Image 1 (cartoon, one colour):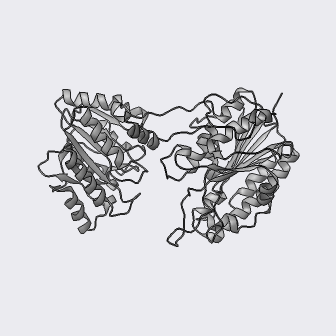
Image 2 (cartoon, one colour):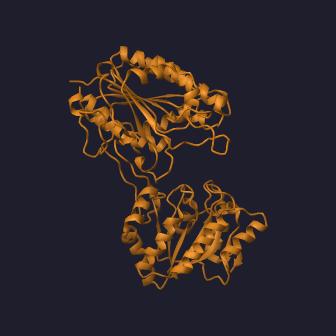
Image 3 (tube, helix red, strand yellow):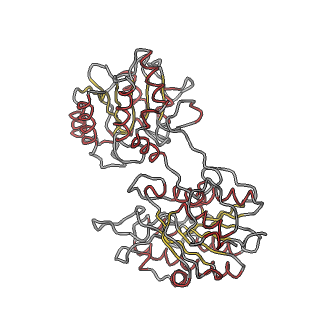
Length: 514
């Protein structure tokens, strides 16, 4: 029997926090959502940190949130996978590291560790570097050269001297490795084919070109003294040229985010590289990366991509059922690519609808309604088309929340509530069951602890409301984003794949299936 159709309505950035002067959600007039929260079963979902596969204390985001919702399980992000390997000691057993150590030792070479030295957690984390030093030492490769790329973008602009100092002390205490170059990310981590910048980093790595230093901490301080903050530190190299890449050496690039690691990797590894002339091309014994930067590089990868299968849309597709994905431009990729956990093409039976986001304003505080009304209009016209599942995103609470302008965020929440007030009654009248939730918080916390505007996501939980007049007596347990799909599928009477390790949040869940 065909299941009752289900609408999953994701109110992006609609988080839950105590009422207060910075809580746009609490200050907004939301009669539609207030009624749903009063009349129907509701619970809270964790959407940050390890609950969504991020490191502890890391706020969630739209990409991670939608992946967890679609996967029906915790989808561990690259940084967390590496953290877990560091914590349980398995990093030292990684075969890519073992092969690199073996190759460099056989060639009489050294291992060079290159990457962003900070705890920003966006491209890398310094704790991974320390664990790598220990891992290579355990693999008998103690001749380790570290090329410290300086941050100042995801961290304060003059915090690099502290990170370099901590690293230098760690290396001295362990008697393993040394810092051989200091390069601002402006030069080593370009992503816009500004090859003149990358060329400076390459020359430092391969020819030792740059301001010489004997003390890396003093070298960073000297850069500050001439107006170069971390991001913009021009290449500085260990005096004597002993830190350059030589024949037989091996390189491990420990950044885990790909976009700003590709250009320098390409320059160091590709035969067909044509971004700039390379005066020196060392014959390396190996080059490996923390994650996959580009499949065409053909390089060993310590933490390769993990395919996530048996996702929500796939279950509906296998059952021969049709589904709708709908959002405005700002969140279209999230209800399609990210909800499908990285699958580009629609599943059979999956229809996609896009409503353009406004382009007549520079920032969305000037138009807090964005295109939510257009998304709602389109959805109302699709409710009678025979879909068994619809996933719809309303972007306002998140996108307007990012502006940090409280009155605009309040208006955005009210715009979303007006759409919910149109969508839910129409869906119920057409025989749909509705889940209302969010992927992460934002608009509920618009004032930072220092009193300034808060423009980032939050660590707050989000709500889940089950809107089904026939099931008002159900009780929902607290959970996480990865529990939505198992709950939805169980109530729809569809099989929950074994790979979906999330939990059905309805008490006596099996008895509640349609």
